[in-house]
Length: 400
Image (tube, rainbow, N blue to C red; front, side, top):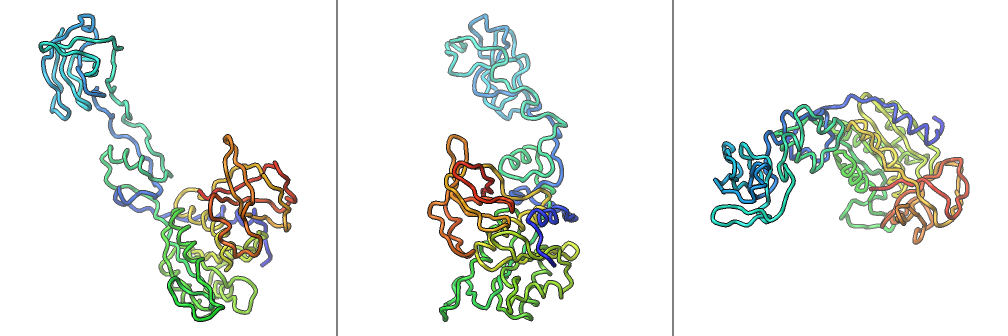
């Protein structure tokens, strides 16, 4: 299978159609999930005129009297609103129903209380501090559309509607497996200088958790075809997407690409003209996917952001990808290939305009993961781009 362009690889993912699974979960378990149905108000909020602060409720036409008799007290949560007569007011608290016959509330600090009466200290407009029926929302109003990611604001509105459980799209389960005989798991003792600490599987687990998936960690496996086969099959039983790192290039011990075909998956693409990470494979069997990424840590991280995120979005019901913005380049950059390149840069804002540079970024292989520490982003240069000069506008992908 020949290499394809970055745009072609993205279109292949865009064209994937997945039957999304909808589940009903507890309200407070739903943070970070994508809403699977519209939320429509089933009542007015408030359902009756309500006090917006502590004060005295009265009929605005009586303000001209200058002095009103306090005829009662109206605490919040009372069964029924009281009634007032001409020349009277009722002490009313925040959240209380407005007494019948009243249409305005004067705050406590704007009156003097003398001999059971209030004396106005200043004029206020009619309807002051009264919450109208439906001020918050009206019956039948669309409050939260399907496809919204549930956060604290949505929790508050759902709770106000007495919704204790919600229908959401199930997060895809993403199995993560790092391959390589040189890899050491976190905490494992190094016995040879050739051994390296595996970080790819943990970076990808963090990416999955951050961007809307449910990570399932399968750790590291040796470069042994039968072991890799067993590990991938096990992960597929429990996952919707299996992400592997390493073993997809052209080396003698790169077995992943062969295993994917041998277990009956259709390869959607293998090899993309991008830098870093051109050796990348995406395969599908029904609603299961295998995304095989390169082994170098910077390459696997960048390709996970480019390919795993939109794949997660297919299950979650929304388009998921890094936010793309324009930035002004503060250093020149000579493109190193005729591929789409994704270059780590420093990002800052200057009077509302993003700027980027390469200060402190190290040159070398696609293993330098430290280049994305700090306030970093990715510059995306297309295959047709060449040299970029100072003050040129470039496209950048933000991590947040």
